[in-house]
Amino acid sequence: MLKKRDLNECHTLFSLMMDPEVFPYVRYKCKFYEEYLFVTKQLIVEEELETCISRTILDDMGHPIGTIDLYDIANKTGFLATWIGTPYFGKGYNQRAKESFFTELFLEHQIETVFLKIRKQNIRSKKAVEKLPYAKLANDIHHEMYKSINKAEQIYDLYQVERLDFFEYSQCFNKQLV
Image (tube, rainbow, N blue to C red; front, side, top):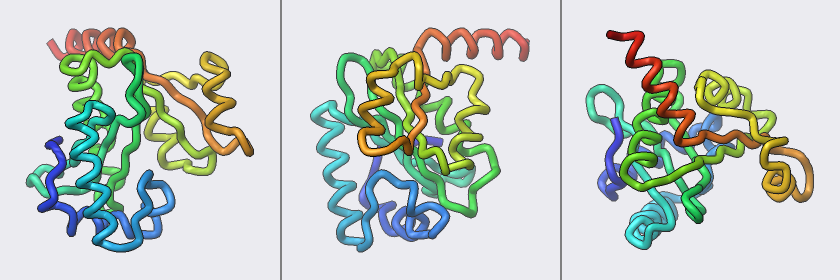
């Protein structure tokens, strides 16, 4: 479902990212393939420096369909950025990718809190994060951070996923399956 970033998948990811339903919401708005290749190389280097963690989201056949990143990592926290190509909308990949990524972040990288800033007009992303039972709206909980991501105008909502909340949900969910 997730793999470390690889330059070989850049052509596929770039074409998926250029879709008008996806492009406005991606973190790195590359207009040219060479620029996307450069940014991907940078992300690979940043991961080596432990300032970001970046993964490619794969479909059930192992084809690249989007990316998921944790950036601005500091003090066991970071910000999440995710996008998936439009042919894969509504198929459950977003939630599965997030759950897999959170498991990696919380177990392997000792991250404690993941923040998500979502544009208020991005209804698709808001609905996706609100489906996650362990995600909380954090506009009031982290009011200073909320103000800092909305310096000019209020365009983002702030959500958070805490390590303990995620694992509490995971344990409850796994008990229901037994």
